Length: 165
Image 1 (tube, helix red, strand yellow):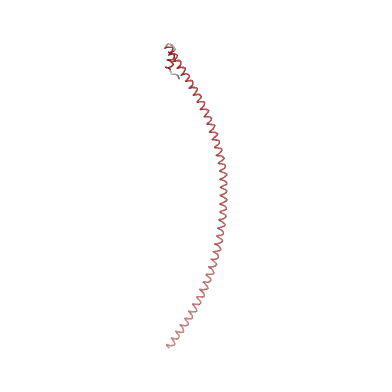
Image 2 (cartoon, one colour):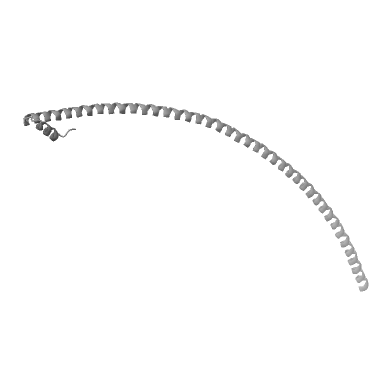
């Protein structure tokens, strides 16, 4: 923008009357303001068009990015489901194998307990029979000794009666 005081001085130095110099200065100022206004309008329009183009480009890029992310998510979800299903099948088979192994081990322990119980029952029966036999022998022996002492007592009492008579 040209300084209006300089324009006025230049026009006045060209031997123009003050009124003409002022009129021309005003006309130049008006033309400058119109040009500035037109430039401003043109620039605003260009800026608006640029913003619209940029917004459209950004919207297209965002949509493309969103589509890529969605596609990756779907692929990841699909892979995850497959991997999870494989993992679940692996866990199921391992639990089944563990259950089978544990059942076999429990069966072996039950068999051993049954064998130990049978041996214990047999040993208990044998021990009770031996104890009964030993008690019967002891009873018989006690009765023999009782009879021997009774006979000895009877002989002693008979001997005393004989002495007392």
